[in-house]
Picture 1 (cartoon, rainbow, N blue to C red):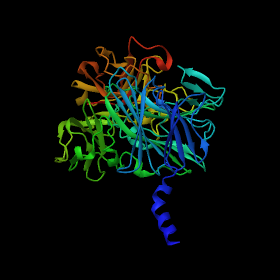
Picture 2: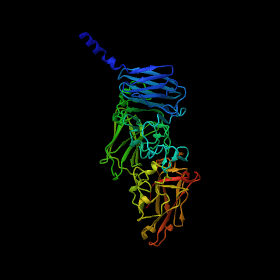
Picture 3: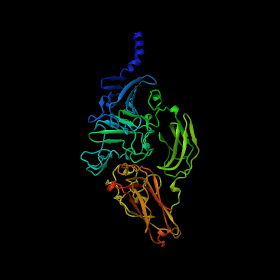
Picture 4: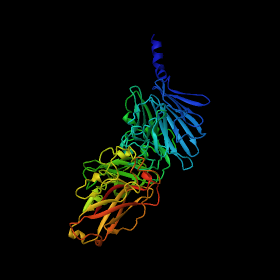
Length: 547
């Protein structure tokens, strides 16, 4: 009896691992995580072809699998097992200059993913998880759920349902918002939660305020996305190298483990797995700032690092402005301090491995709101916050089309300084929708006697749109277009482009000399590009003022 007990004790670790491991056929590797999740990977192209959780299949629709981009071609797919620092199985998928990793760890109902983008020869804008439809919940009020019988109103990805609600996979403002606002995407029932936990995006593009599609749903399909590179609304160049880990996590209905979030995770167990492009925490440094002076009340300040290879960021403390950016790969970066989404300070910072770069209190000198204005509409914070249709949060135009009936008509009445609230000025202006908007204002005798400066800040422009102005009978020169992305923007839920301030010097001779009379500023969007309606040339307004 004693001998039998000792034998069972000796076999206990092996019995515990009985379900753990992988099997293979000529076509597939199948991995059992010993945590209720069994998944299969194609030996041909690295697609995930099956995801069985607690006996239920959740993978795929219409014979489509989960994969990089829309699926890689014929690839080299290999598998390796590790027993230290934990029981781990790693699948490596090599397709041209791209290397993709699919990893399992014993006892975890997770699929760990990482993608090394080599160069432009292999397109890699996303990893897409394709799930069986009608398993996870959806509603006709969901901004990213395409109802049956809807009418397509723009391109092939924006629709309007029978209730008049506009829908798109791009419309995530009410679900997730900007990259820095969310840790994961997904849905749950009482039996299962399926979550795609984003990477830290150090090799993605667009910075902390980037907005894009991350989820989409129809009655025949359900998708989750990790964005590897997406140029929607921004001009940040694609970064090459390893992005990840990002994690596909299964639960029994609860939210994912917060220890998997990019800002919390301990990835030291990846250090010995031989991932191409992997940089261990021990080879990284960090940057810490003592504080930010002259912070404006009501704004969140963000510190962000970027160069051509990486991007990182951290949020400043509301009370002191102290901030830290952790796990930074060594190199020289541009540090930007943002008030809201407007960069009010930039400088160069060098980070060394295993060391802290400490910075004294920063006093931003680039806040346009520091200029004393005669009048100002909105605030220069890199967003249209407070303006028409952006006066509630989350901002409605980030989760519906500009034509949506729930929005206030963009062609609002003329603006009267001192009477009309900021919410009466259109946040978006289009050449073909609400052009030639008028602002009425009065000046004192002293103000009339000198030239004045008008500033119009924009956060995005579509199709080369830019504002020109007239004050009474005086007309400004035609400005050049700002540098912006060539993609759609204002109609796909984002105002986040490149902040730019147009400055116009208005001569004293332009003003009416009677102080009782209203001066009239006319703003006109011009461009030789664009089409009609909401796809005509347009701009997103940050703020405008005169001083």
